[in-house]
Length: 79
Image (cartoon, rainbow, N blue to C red; front, side, top):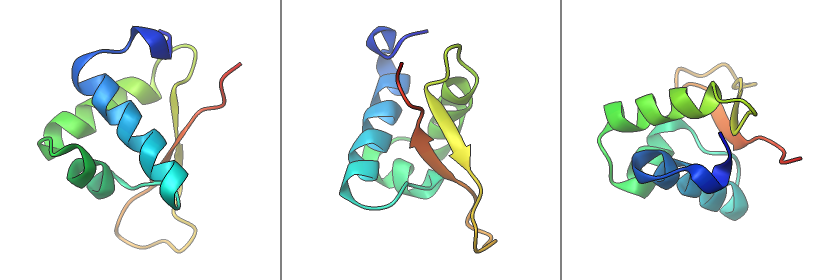
């Protein structure tokens, strides 16, 4: 799936990650939920779909500080 083909919740989550990543550091799931105003389960499902697309759209970055806040999410490099 290509970024241009995203719609609905997937598109909102993708845009949120792009905007948050541009403003500061890569966002966590909670940051994406707050930015989109969507339900946490909707965001979690969209992130899962975007992590498992071909070609990759998002990728997960482990928390280097190993907090209980979960991983960071970043846009995958576009080719």
